[in-house]
Every structure is written in structure tokens, then in C-alpha cells.
View (spheres, rainbow, N blue to C red):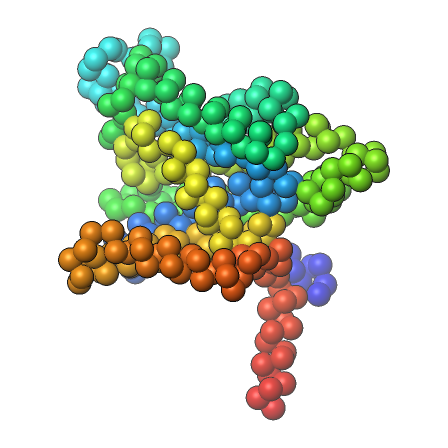
Length: 349
């Protein structure tokens, strides 16, 4: 397919999705909008984790920690000074943070940069480890952050957490209900930038490292540099997802970001396919909507937690029949859609 045609199609699709997201709260119920927004946030988190675990082959379990950095940064930067004074009851908020107040998108980017900086600092020693050792070290980092957030009362409000975080508004900020506009915008930016990175020479180097580190190093690829790059970029977008999650729920506390949350994101990545961005997106929507819609099983049966049993069975089936996830390492592209359309057209004729 011609490159100009693809660019035009991508622009049209992006504009269409942003327009839809900006006005969708007038077309669907609040429940549907909340799930749509959560799916987009999960998709950002899953794509960022897929870059580290799926495309680079690192086994990192520190994602919840990076998301916590984004969530707390966004909360502190978007809360009004008056609300901060009311929320910090046990100990007053640290002086310099009281009057800080920025728009959501600025807070998200600042949170992303802080998370990327943390990733660079811990990446230098941690990324020399491999396999299970890296998983344990990154999981330890995430748990340390939870303890720090719990005890850093003058910044995070301790175990009480932060509430009254400004919610997600549309482009004009005039809507009274939740809008998926900002999650959609950052979802598209995440997809675009990660796609560009993966298709670049850096992305090909990351895949080479995933396939065989020794061979990649023998070809002249700097393992430490590329692993750190992947780790920092993944942390940046994980933080964006965390910040949006804080605005989605309008309240956060340290317990939300324990290791279980990392496993949820990892689950989405595995179901979608390790090494497929579009697989992560599909799995995010399936997970968010599926888990919510299956609540009806608990209500009908009267057995609390039945939906988790059914979900676990479905997960086992997926693993049995799609061992590499729904998409494997494949991507949904304009070319693949065109081939599918032409094949169906040929079958009809």
C-alpha cells in the first residue's frame, strides 16, 4: 500500500477516534464510557509492558511501580491548593507542592519523565540481571515504592491516599461526566510512538536481543544501551497510564499499586500476544469489558467470585489453544485488513 495513502488513512482514523471520544459521553451510558476509558488506559499500560517484556524479551515485574509514580505525580499536580490543604490532615503537605497546579496533560508528561528517570537509575544495575533475577529485582523495586508512598506522608498523604483528583474532561472541559478524550489522545500517541520505535533500527535491535542476546552482542548491538532505552520508554508510558488511572478513579492509595496490579497488566500482554501491540489493545478491551460483564454471574448464582472462576477457565482455554496469545507476534495493519477484505470479496463472487 502506498505510504501517502497509509498516512491519510491513519490521520482520518485518528481524527475520527478523537472526535468520537470527545462526544461519546453524549451517546453512551456512563457505565460504558467508564469501561471504554479503562480499556484505553489498560491498553497504554499493556503496550508499554509489551515493549519491555514482549519486544525486548526482558522479564520485568516493576510496572505497577512506574504506574504509581505517574498516578501520584498527576494527583499532586492537578489537585487544587484548597483540596490539598483539606486532604492532608495527618501532616500538612510539603510547602513547595502546595501551590503546584497544572493541566492534566502537563502532569502526565512530568510524571512520565520522572518515571523514565527512575527507570534509568535502576536500569543501570538491574538490567545486568537476566530472567528470574530481573523479575525479582524489578518486583522488589515496585514493592519498595509502595512502602515509600505509604510512609511519605507529607507528599503522598500516606496510607490514606489522595481523593478529589480532578476527573477526565473532554477537550473543552465543559462536560460534567467522564470523557475518554485524553485517554484516547494518549492511547493514539503511545501506539504511534511505540510503532515508530519498533519499526526503527532500535526496534530491530530490541527484537534481536529478545531472540538471542549473545548473537545480538556479536553483531555489535550495545545490550545495556538498548535494554535501558526499552526500560525507560516503557516506564514513561506506564506512568502515563497510571496518571490517567488516577484521574479515571479520582482517588488513589498505595495498596492499588501492589504486585497484583502488575500481574493484571502482564495477563493482558500474555493474552494479547507477547510482541504484538494490537494484541495488547484487543486484550485490554476484552479484559476490561469481560470482567465487568461477568459480574452478572455472581449476581445470578449468588456465589461471590464465580466470575473469577469462569475467567480463569477462559484464560486456561486461551493458553491451551493460543499458546502465543490471540495475536502472537502479528499486527493488524491496513495491508492485512485489505487482504482480508479482498479474500472475503473473492469468496462472495
